[in-house]
Image (tube, rainbow, N blue to C red; front, side):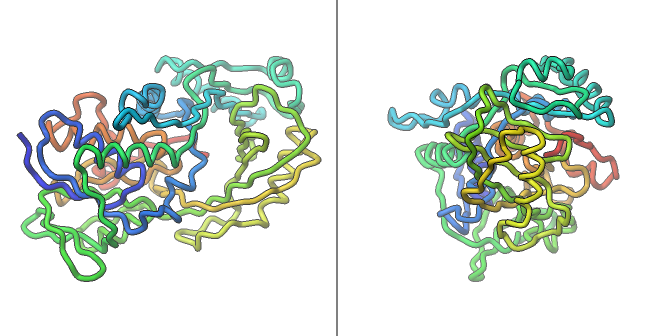
Length: 388
């Protein structure tokens, strides 16, 4: 049996998923401690996420991670129930709809071939088909759309985080409020996690799941993780418009929107996208968002902003894909960082993979090795084209 002490830095959805899968592993009998500096999760990306899941990626491995993710979410009661109490995610599988003009149609078709080869339930719709299926949408400037027919949608991300956390604690995982500052190491091995107050928590294995704050933790370890915090603003809007059967729509401009109860939420990449900026909503973006939405859905001309919030993307500037697996110089330090906006949906696959790697010494369910840090050292980007 494995009796090591594993310390996970970051108690968000990634860190809590690792904790759950590790504690649930039949051959792990060690201790798991999760360090979270803000147990209220006020600034945590997990709590501020738009919390969606899709299979429309351009990287086959990302598709496979999402396929496990949707299966896990559908059976969440089986996995994360505690003392008969069942978590409720409000999972809505209304799909994603990627829209393209003539200039983007070829890329959408290339991605479609990759997705169909991976058994994704997705359809390409021409302009007439788009108009027929979504008559409330202006499609005059569009050439094609890619619609996920199943296995895509959105859910309550905060509820997923709390379900992972509660289940992990019921399995014996300890959560501590602590501000980690770095990793102690000697002779090529991590020996502990250094806290802000100078205390060092000894460990046999450490996991960096600190999200947008992961990079500074690795100072002095010989590896510069190319992960930064990028601020994204989400607007909650209201309108008398009707958008029946509305999926999550990605406009060619990069704007996305989807229903949220009686309202809609939307967001778009900012023109100026600095690293690690202050976590504040950019209200000046709303005028641009409104113009794009009113063009796409004419009834959105009467659109009003109700509120907005901002959250960090832990953005991998190297190739917009996650970095998962051992630190290049410290094999007992695991990395789970840089998900670039799709960490919530890939948390189950990441947690399972890290647990397998730690206990079994290799991935046994899904090979995540293409996401290892070695590709960064080799200069071999694993580019993901479908980043929102």
